[in-house]
Image 1 (cartoon, rainbow, N blue to C red):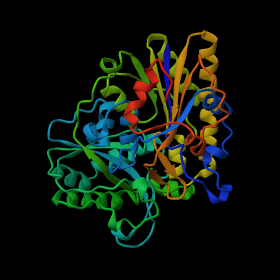
Image 2 (cartoon, rainbow, N blue to C red):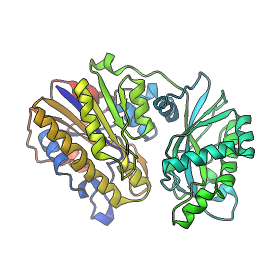
Image 3 (cartoon, helix red, strand yellow):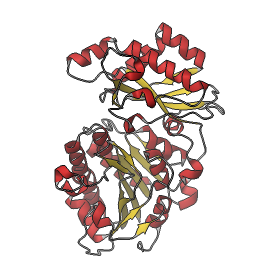
Image 4 (tube, helix red, strand yellow):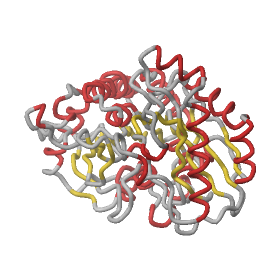
Length: 413
């Protein structure tokens, strides 16, 4: 028996007036996934425990069976693990996003945040900007005084590590949850070190705003990557081993450091794929092929596709629908075809880790639809994979139960 997990990041949403009250999942043409929903067990699951932030760190930890109320130590520390970055005891890792701030002649704190990804800046340009920023005289001096170093991420997602700061009481805000807002009320607050981070962010804007790369981006009609944003702070923490708990070995195929880091920390093989961008233009076929190859040597394979989430953050609803359709026909369909050809029994879990709302361009922690399909069973329910139909099935109270259900010999009840 083989076991496959497919995570379409942020696929779930809410009804949209502009689509006649349908959600993007209902608008998308996903015949393959819908067949799995009809034949398998379709239901809802709470991947974000009540009171916790609705982020992929919380949700994906849950899906992999790690209780986020016990093991969430900060997203950045999880992502650092994916790159082999050592976060020593007492040191703090931060996600250091390249962001696009409003082009306007006004005080730094009065500007709006327009993009959490620096206008989806290309990885090589993002690396150039962050390296040159940390090498610039004024910013370099301030970073050294703060005890901070940066590790370029070859995307808008960099990791910064600060040596033994006092962050008690600090509040840092995810940039993708505050798009279009004036940053004055979402800058770091809560302790002296918050002021240190805020000063670094201001200095970064002053340097990056006039950088030639950003002048070129403006001339091309693109948003500039003219700021950095510190958030997702945390220390490294050990996670429970996957194989020891479930008696299965496996691998993870993902475009993003968060899912890669969780996979590495729980002992799964992490597979990197050329052209896996985390955007709408990602290498769907290459990721599907890599996930299938994992099953040559292991019982379990997980594939995580970021595009629906990124499209929603970018305000691209048509892109979100397209991403969902491509997950169906460029990932799930070819994987199923190959699995059927091999003739080996398998079970597949298809899920949206959390909801990403078109209305706010941010995350939401309400229950999400999931499918557990068993190749030996056809329930013929006629249900489709969407938020409304999933309400007709079982409700799983905690996402941490999903792996046990997937590996169970029984159906969901």
